[in-house]
Image (cartoon, rainbow, N blue to C red; front, side, top):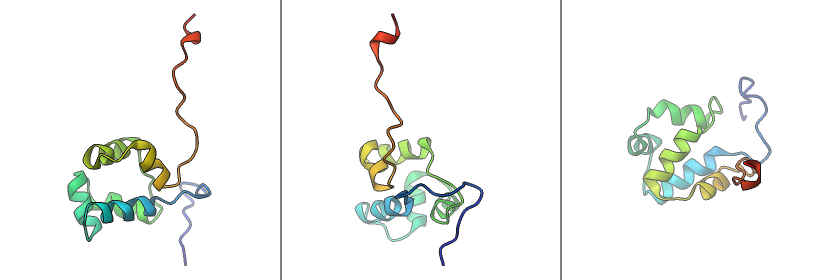
Length: 96
């Protein structure tokens, strides 16, 4: 039975950070989340909390994953199902 996370609210449709974590394990030839945590220099409990829907992948963790793996931010976001258009290009006309 999948645990629901009431603290973070209902998960977005399609949002699945486990897909990203599993892909990272495969691409980095790792066997455990603990090995992934070591590479990312984070506490293994962070990955556990993400896997169990107690925490979300933060922007700073996403950047760290990008820096360690050279996978683009866009691809990382797509892997975890984050498809919202959150980042808008800077518009010159707003300065005038």
